[in-house]
Image 1: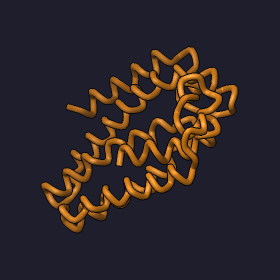
Image 2 (image 1 turned 30 degrees about the vertical axis):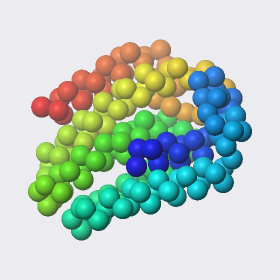
Image 3 (image 1 turned 60 degrees about the vertical axis):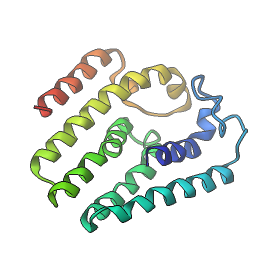
Amino acid sequence: MRSAGSTVNDIADRKFDAHVERTRFRPLANGQLGPRQAIVFLIVELALAASLLFFLSPYTRLIAICVLPLVFIYPLCKRFTHWPQAVLGAAFNWGMLMAWTEVSGHIPAGAIVMWIGAIAWQIGYDTVYAYVDVKDDARLGLKSTAILFGQKGKTCIGLFYALQSHHGR
């Protein structure tokens, strides 16, 4: 699903990526691949991921399927919210919720706390990453926590890392 998420992101952002220094050489952004080819590849990735569902309990399958909206919404978030990193964190760390359900048959409160801590870590980490693209994103009218935090980025990132370590206890 991580690879499928990257493919969804590259399809959605191909026109933006062509104007961002770090991403302009991605195959969809530079025209090496077309959207149709990428969609076929995405379908194959999703089919392979779906084949793994057969090895999971019915409840874990349901939890696994529930991540799909996050995977498809994430690339669009930078168009309407400064918090795409939070959606990315929720999707990237969804596997821990699946692991809890597979092992225990439910999602205990402690698992939710750990998941929130992992989201906080992801926001911190991906905000650092977003600062690389901040000038291009601002020019293109995109949003991110890096743009939102501006000069207060180090403090805000530090707060998210502190939140992560507090929730990780």
